[in-house]
Image 1 (cartoon, helix red, strand yellow):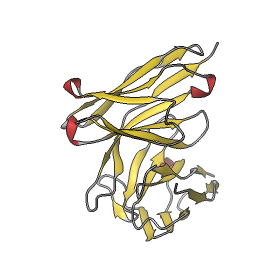
Image 2: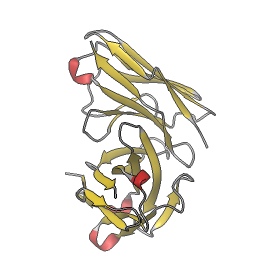
Image 3: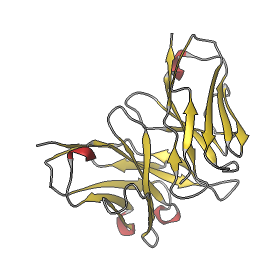
Length: 122
Length: 107
């Protein structure tokens, strides 16, 4: 079964660093990108960026560029989303998802993790 | 950056009714438009890819249409389990984006 398994909920203070993870299984991890999507409480989905685990090439949304770092370790089939200094406004659910394509070269996200809740509060 | 605008934001519908949700792109995106369903406390789930292509395991009452800038998700004969928020997503160009969502409530 193809799965993306995300790390557990985190509670952090403003200014702290954090790295959350997303482990792929049931497929060739280096054959598919991984995307990260934010959902703030009661709000919609926001695409943050994506990584190609085969070479760690990344694309970021301008809204998130410089605020987060997306990385991957292909040896353990895991992608990461990292903050160096959290803010209260980073409180949200974060999903990883697997972009894929079929009848054209444009991607859709067919597999999603269950999400990691990040709470930042003093 | 391509902006997706969904309408309506909210819809309250009785079972067996037909639901139509539209998604308009700020510029032409061909058929690179996909639809997702998100139920409360769940991850999004892919419903329709490439504007109109069905997904294995998704009930046939869900269908999509459109190309260019105007797209539609139709739910024929709404069922109680369809209560959810629906999002469109474009992958025509980076940064990818989502519509703001349409919440469908069952009366």
